[in-house]
Length: 214
Image (cartoon, rainbow, N blue to C red; front, side):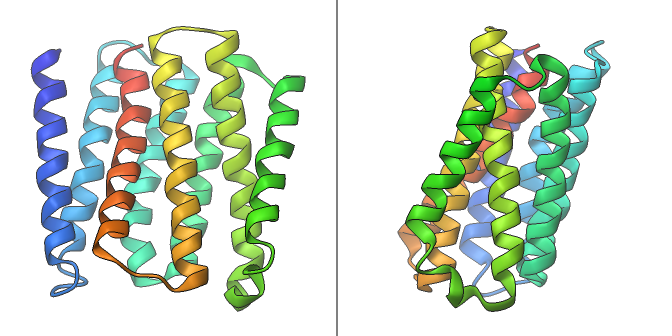
């Protein structure tokens, strides 16, 4: 077990670093490294399924991670379709989490709270998105639901697997919030790019580990 964890983590770091180093010079060619890094968490998740962890929630997380791989590429080629594909991935995660804990009052309050904070922070910048405004608002609602339900599941059904799931969801939230800042304010920097990659790959890796460590 420890050998696979170390191998996939190392390969994710290598592929992610190659993508970060090459994306400006080879915008399309470097996408193979971006997607390959995310495939490492698909590998872990698939290994968990192969070991007998084949509940509905585990399969939904696996399918969601496959959509993340696709979204990695689409986001760089056509931003809108990338957002839509990530939204589908989060719907898969939500379906899996729902099987664990259903919908609780705490989850609903959390969804409203997270989405409300998003609107408070970004309401002035949303008009700058033009045609992306509605897709981004819908995506934020789906992401808020996924994060709140994942955290609630970790509280209601505690355990190592659920903690990984909740941590991955929270990392997704922070990563996507920073992407929103970058997109709205049109801010670009090497530091921000590196932080985004670390948060995103950390998010998907922990989502995959939630099945691997089940």
